[in-house]
Image 1 (tube, helix red, strand yellow):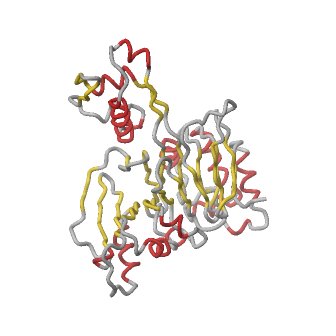
Image 2 (cartoon, rainbow, N blue to C red):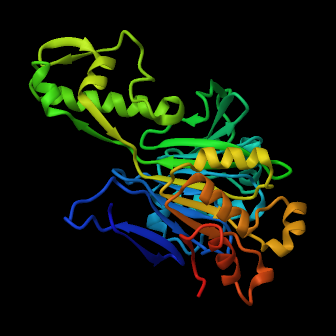
Image 3 (cartoon, helix red, strand yellow):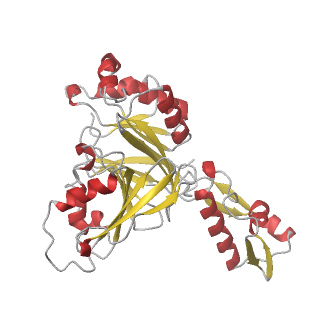
Amino acid sequence: MAQRTWNRGLGGITIEDRGNAAGERDLPMIGFELVNGSVGDPCVYIQVPFTRANAMLDCGLNVSVPAGKLLRVADVFVSHAHIDHMIGFDWLVRANLTHDKVLNVYGPAPLAEQVQSRLRAYTWNLDTRAWVTIVCHEIGDDAITTTRLPCENRFVPGEPPRVRPLAEDVIPHPHLRVRFARLEHRITSVAYSLQAPPRMNVDAAALAEAGLAPGPWLRELKSRAALSLRMSPGGRCPEAGLPDDDRIDADGRTLPTKQLIRDLLSVKEGFKLVYVTDTLYTPETRESIVDLARNADVFLCEGMFLTRDADTARSVYHLTAQQAGQLAAQADVGELVLFHFSGRYADDYGALVREARREFPRVRACGID
């Protein structure tokens, strides 16, 4: 097991993989920084492995994030559009405005209308060609509706929205396996699971037994298996997302891709980070959260109230720290990181951490002594 250390950064927490006792690194990790710690607006800066195209979970106040980091943000996963989860969106757009790039924003409807409404408040009378394009992806019951908002068109859609069926609860992404769950906050609040690419290992003995020589075709085989894994239900079957007639040129022979994956590859699931905030605790939401967070390496979960204030938590559709600890235990996660604390506990925020630890031992918070 790799040794992981926790460091402060941007007022938040970062995790770093230091490798195991032999100096070998474990699976590539998803780095994260709680921009405002466990007390301030929800905003998590995500460092995506193998790419400089990073992400954010929610977009609360983020003026403390350096412009260079904001420029690397390619995707924003929004739970819902309450002001403490979206107030930093304009600042993110400001940092990326004059750059020829696509900024993807995911969240529940009416996301596109909400983003357009924010941007209509500004005056756009300059030459904005080759400036940023914002692409809104609204997560519906059985489809994702995508609306392109190019700055050169003053963030007005230049084409009709595109509707794509949802494959289970999976959002297509080039670098991560992204799953989601709809939670109850009087409105829909979306929880997200971000999982790094799996490690694909070739069985050398099986390769020799099949009479195949190593070569570039193995990289293509791993690439197809990884893509299939990202899109397969549950993310556990690397060949499930491939058509039966898919074939690959392997060492001068054209062979079925599915069979090659089954015979030659072993797969270790990638590092998994799950983000849950702003939800009522019910049997239905508990089941959805536990399913989403199962075996996560890091579980970022709100713990806004103490159990003594459970009636208040229910009335405002939030979780208690005890409930967060119970969810972590039921999902068998590696670490629980609590955040989104109510200011009523300013004299002793540590009480929230202590309460969660009574349910689950591995609990951390940021900026709490």
